[in-house]
Image (tube, rainbow, N blue to C red; front, side, top):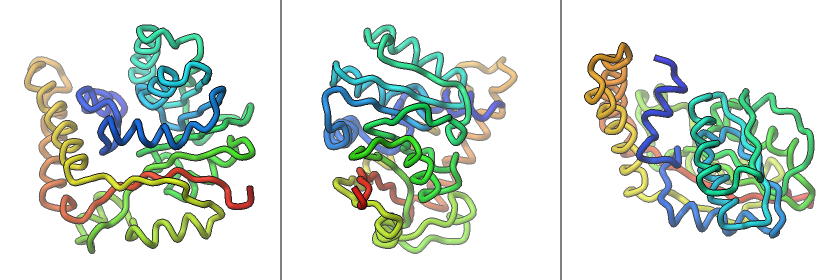
Amino acid sequence: MDRDLLSYRAHADHPIASPLDDDSVRRLLTRSVHRPDARVLDLGCGTGQWLLRTLTAHPGTRAEGVDLSAPALRRAGELAEAAGVADRLVLHHGNASELPAAHAFDLVLSVGATHAFGGLLPTLAAAREHLAPGGRILVGDGFWEREPGPEAVRTLGDFTDLATTVDRVVADGWTPVYGHVSTRQELDDYEWCWTGTLAGWALDHPDDPDAAEALATATAHRTGWLREYRDSFGFLCLVLRRTAD
């Protein structure tokens, strides 16, 4: 089963592809969009939820998004048309790490997509290439709330604790001007939606050639979450400005 299609189906009932609820998304965008005519870029936009919410809340903004998933980008275009903001949105099909820096943006987002760049600091380096002077970055990535077991590290990667994560960002030349740590409810709701939606799709489409793999993937993901990393994984969003600015 195509990985991008799997992810698209799994996120159908939780369109923000990260453990964040609607209020948290709204607060983060309020602290990130700092001018009424802002240009906004999402590196790894998926179905464009961050951009659609920005364009709807701020009529003077313009936005661009890039993603590898063709189904997600098609859905983003459909949602933009329905919301009446398609004339202010440009979507690029491709690798977020290879998007040319054609012009500068007042806000660059990459929430839950740092794997596309090889980690948090490489994501910030890539975002910096697109950032206008005085601009902001909104980035979201994992950290360890508690000491992880070896299975959790193998599954999710070699994160650090919250304080060390922030220290590394600051040492890289960034100043946090806002942040959000996902709550247990946000984390659990995301995982239940991801696994349940994908499993539900498989049960609703038993004759689809991808059904068995989708159900097995949902089951394996749920088991890994509950047994390997639920008690240790956390998720952090930061709104950042360049310290040199």
